[in-house]
Image (cartoon, rainbow, N blue to C red):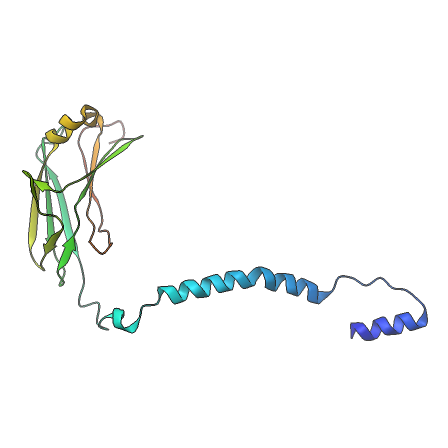
Length: 179
């Protein structure tokens, strides 16, 4: 229709100023949105699992659930922490080495717990309904680095070998201004 009006105005000898093409604006909009749509489509295809990896349809019956408990032997400046992990789910779980994090307001120090008394028992295969206890001697860490005594908080993070991380548990080792 614009072409017809352009032809009619040129033949009559009058010149009119034509505004920007509506199609040009549409082309720019498509050029901007097309890469975003392609990216989202590729991500959606990558997230889908193959039918062989999907597993049974009743996945809510086979659930991985851990109850993690972290206790200290004294209220302030404890010498020992006791980590108790109970498999409350209906599926066996393969656990990685727990990550012990000493944290203060500015810094964090991370240690992997491999076992006790030079006996390495991680990765640990924990069957459904079983309980695993680990006694953590904090003095061993304090001998490694004296500054760790100033860190008020200890957190234990437990993750599965396949990558799933379970909720972390924390304990305050000493009083702070806020806690």
